[in-house]
Image 1 (tube, rainbow, N blue to C red):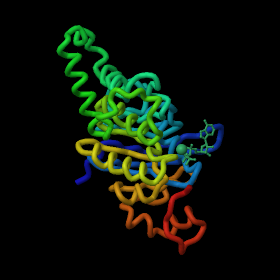
Image 2 (spheres, protein in one colour):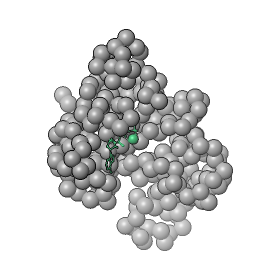
Image 3 (cartoon, rainbow, N blue to C red):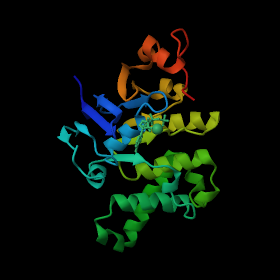
Image 4 (tube, protein in one colour):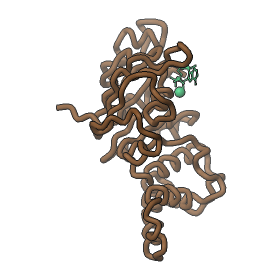
Length: 256
Ligand SMILES: Nc1ncnc2c1ncn2[C@@H]1O[C@H](COP(=O)(O)OP(=O)(O)OP(=O)(O)O)[C@@H](O)[C@H]1O
Ligand SMILES: [Mg+2]
């Protein structure tokens, strides 16, 4: 039985006659880690922009928990629980880690204004923020200014601020981009850990990350789905190898 949290049907985006995303049918299973991979320019980021409504699809449908969300605004999509982890610029460099996570929690609870009047609720906000920092391995740095963090830790903080918004579906665009080997491993483990009880859709170039944590992989090429399945299946698909390596006898490796 399939239990899709997110589905796209014939999702298409054209830019002045150029088709960046072409008739994409995605089905993301609830509770899974689903990776979107493909060579540079394949349409991965455009897909994400369509899912979060940063861009309007030219044609096609997006379903979330069975609801047609194709025409909804970005804020409505976020309220439904589709949260994208933003690039580093989204965390405030001169706030502490704790303050950044607390802001995420406040955004999540934004409408219940009176909540903030009670001292007790502020304490519980701190407790929850510390919990989230502990989850991403940053508990002991809670009072550090964000600007002082090394790059890999900033990306982990970004995951914590995203988690603060209680995502049901979390979208991560290249969470390990620009990281050294150790940070890559750490963030991969972190994603696996925080995936419990959630669904994660991620764009990722690093094949060791994808092969370790992704349940399902969709390969895009020139805007269209080239292959889909678990890593073992996708990585031995001759068309996929050719798309990545320009050869059919190479091992599937990172695009970068
Ligand atoms: N706003 C835009 N206007 C015109 N063309 C665009 C626009 N955004 C993206 N494209 C084009 O659409 C194609 C897909 O781009 P996209 O950024 O989605 O690729 P990607 O798979 O994320 O690549 P990368 O791995 O390099 O991040 C590219 O050819 C790109 O030049
Ligand atoms: Mg991209």
